[in-house]
Length: 77
Image (cartoon, rainbow, N blue to C red; front, side, top):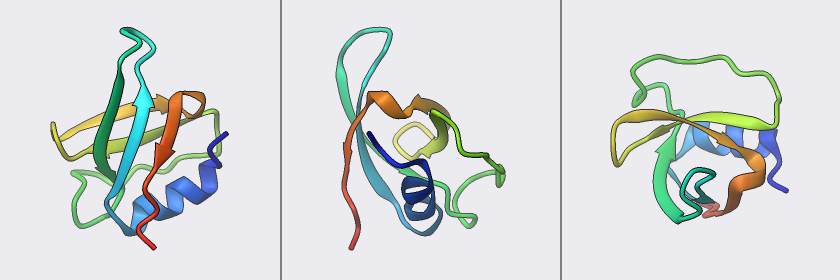
Protein backbone atom coordinates (compact mmCIF):
# COMPACT_ATOMS: atom_id res chain seq x y z
CA UNK A 1 0.00 0.00 0.00
CA UNK A 2 1.10 3.56 -0.72
CA UNK A 3 2.49 5.52 2.23
CA UNK A 4 0.48 8.72 2.75
CA UNK A 5 3.38 10.81 4.12
CA UNK A 6 5.84 9.79 1.40
CA UNK A 7 3.41 10.51 -1.45
CA UNK A 8 2.28 13.79 0.13
CA UNK A 9 5.89 15.00 0.44
CA UNK A 10 6.64 14.13 -3.20
CA UNK A 11 3.48 15.92 -4.35
CA UNK A 12 4.35 19.01 -2.32
CA UNK A 13 7.72 19.26 -4.10
CA UNK A 14 7.13 17.81 -7.57
CA UNK A 15 4.69 16.90 -10.30
CA UNK A 16 4.12 13.16 -9.89
CA UNK A 17 2.52 10.75 -12.38
CA UNK A 18 -0.05 8.79 -10.33
CA UNK A 19 -1.68 5.61 -11.66
CA UNK A 20 -4.92 4.51 -10.02
CA UNK A 21 -8.00 2.39 -10.59
CA UNK A 22 -11.32 4.24 -10.51
CA UNK A 23 -13.77 2.97 -7.90
CA UNK A 24 -16.71 3.97 -10.13
CA UNK A 25 -15.67 2.55 -13.50
CA UNK A 26 -12.88 0.12 -12.66
CA UNK A 27 -10.75 1.78 -15.36
CA UNK A 28 -7.09 2.56 -14.79
CA UNK A 29 -5.85 6.13 -15.13
CA UNK A 30 -2.41 7.71 -15.11
CA UNK A 31 -2.47 11.43 -14.37
CA UNK A 32 0.01 14.21 -13.54
CA UNK A 33 -0.69 15.51 -10.03
CA UNK A 34 0.85 17.89 -7.54
CA UNK A 35 0.43 19.76 -4.28
CA UNK A 36 3.09 22.37 -5.09
CA UNK A 37 2.11 25.70 -3.54
CA UNK A 38 3.10 27.60 -6.71
CA UNK A 39 0.73 25.49 -8.86
CA UNK A 40 -2.41 24.66 -6.86
CA UNK A 41 -5.16 27.27 -6.44
CA UNK A 42 -5.11 26.85 -2.63
CA UNK A 43 -2.86 25.06 -0.18
CA UNK A 44 -4.79 22.38 1.72
CA UNK A 45 -3.67 20.89 5.03
CA UNK A 46 -4.21 17.16 5.27
CA UNK A 47 -3.87 14.71 8.11
CA UNK A 48 -2.66 11.18 7.48
CA UNK A 49 -5.59 9.17 6.23
CA UNK A 50 -6.60 6.31 3.95
CA UNK A 51 -7.15 8.87 1.16
CA UNK A 52 -5.20 11.80 -0.24
CA UNK A 53 -6.37 15.01 -1.87
CA UNK A 54 -4.27 15.97 -4.87
CA UNK A 55 -4.48 18.45 -7.73
CA UNK A 56 -4.87 16.99 -11.23
CA UNK A 57 -2.92 18.93 -13.82
CA UNK A 58 -4.75 17.30 -16.76
CA UNK A 59 -8.10 18.76 -15.67
CA UNK A 60 -7.02 21.49 -13.21
CA UNK A 61 -9.29 19.99 -10.57
CA UNK A 62 -8.92 18.45 -7.11
CA UNK A 63 -9.13 14.66 -6.83
CA UNK A 64 -9.65 12.71 -3.61
CA UNK A 65 -8.07 9.26 -4.02
CA UNK A 66 -8.16 6.32 -1.67
CA UNK A 67 -4.61 5.09 -1.15
CA UNK A 68 -5.77 1.52 -1.80
CA UNK A 69 -6.77 2.47 -5.38
CA UNK A 70 -3.33 3.88 -6.25
CA UNK A 71 -1.50 1.23 -8.28
CA UNK A 72 1.78 3.14 -8.59
CA UNK A 73 3.39 6.52 -8.94
CA UNK A 74 6.56 7.70 -10.63
CA UNK A 75 9.08 8.85 -8.06
CA UNK A 76 10.82 11.90 -9.63
CA UNK A 77 14.18 10.93 -8.10
